[in-house]
Length: 199
Image (cartoon, rainbow, N blue to C red; front, top):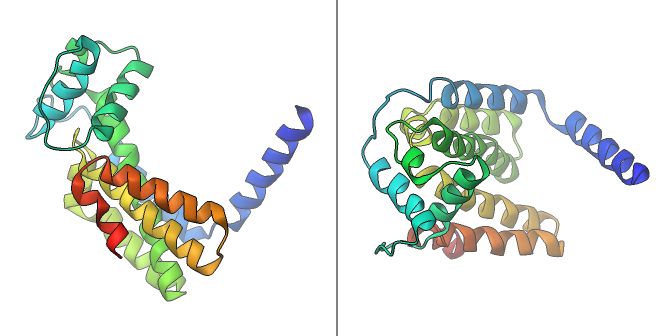
């Protein structure tokens, strides 16, 4: 056990040193624009009414009709279960606990865009600018601060594109498997998530 933990620590240290400075800056901007103040507004906004109610119904075993696949709602329900929430607290106006999950997916979009542009262009500057644009894009910030499906969908879809590019540059089986799993996950959020499969 000690040898394995030492190997994992060494691998993480190497990964830490390999990440470029601009990527750390983009992470910081993404975190600062998406996580603080998630309690505002203290009311249910737009489609939050559905994406808090439907996952709560997994706890009460009530059937409901949804035209989209269930993975996004299941992730929210799993997150709520992890934090010992009940259906009433899930549907409470401005549920910060549920908004945190979506914000984390919103944060993940920024380094994924950086990675995709860096793989396509080979330029750290282009990748940093693309990541910065996504990090400060108000539409993406708003989506990531409310209990909506779009941040989860984008994270899985962009993850699939990034994994496919990694496989193109280094055809190892695990990048191909990751591509398939991430496309499947994106398609299991909304049917439009299958778009990366067409690229």
